[in-house]
Length: 352
Ligand code: MG
Ligand code: ZN
Image (cartoon, rainbow, N blue to C red; front, side, top):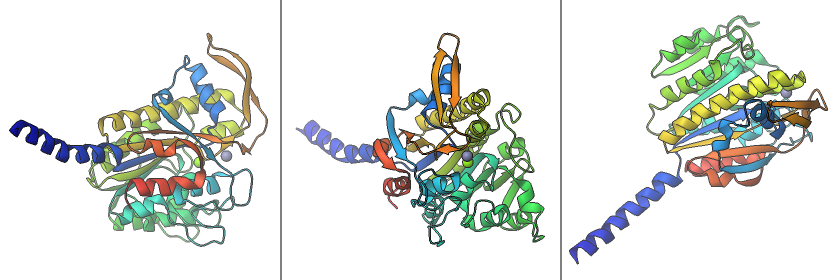
């Protein structure tokens, strides 16, 4: 009888704990492959021997990417939808269509005492990272976007674009201002990796980040470095990681470069999944802001790992993009969704 009571009590106490431990994430990593449609993912898979880290995802959905004023979104409106939960006009950054400020998931997380970060393979002032950090009517306002880092509260930011912080028309030095706010400014990947805690802005390049292979393992290693720092906060964190240049290769209709950028992003996804497999309170979301190039592949050779690429446009297309999720709460992102629904789903899972 004693044994039965004990077992019953054990179940009573353990069961809710286990449910909470597996159903609710504390950490969320949002990974955006800029311009990454299904064809871009398959391009990487074909040249990589019919295999990608992406295949570790079991939970898959589709995101509708149209913006407030266009069938085909740009990265400003596409990223704003993901970050801030609102469909806005093309070229806008972290704003509603009426130019009022839209709060990003990183800003909400900060209010709830979580740590936040952005890691990108482009300038920190470029549209996608800006959508999570800044509030400006036009994505080309790089200097204004750089200054918005001061108010973002972000704990870790790694990318390029140093000159927009330092060589400015208004003569302000934003990196100096960030330092006075307690930030460590790193100028190389090694300097970033040496940081174990605190607030770090890695401005690794003067302007844009070079393409693969010139930038080496900058993206996967920066993602791991950011996780290492953000991990110190026991309340959790929200991190955005962008494979920024899948889009650029597709604008150039360059299939070979696209596969290099796609595999670099896939390697980064693999590193984040490795982290999430050990830290089971981590939800990983991988999606795109839009497809670029209208890429199709009417033929190819799986044995040789080659495909025939046909790009239909130099710009973006309006098709659905895939959504892959792993970890607690992954189920919430199955099926079809608006690109503006990510923020609410994440807030609900994080119990904000
Ligand atoms: Mg981008
Ligand atoms: Zn683009």
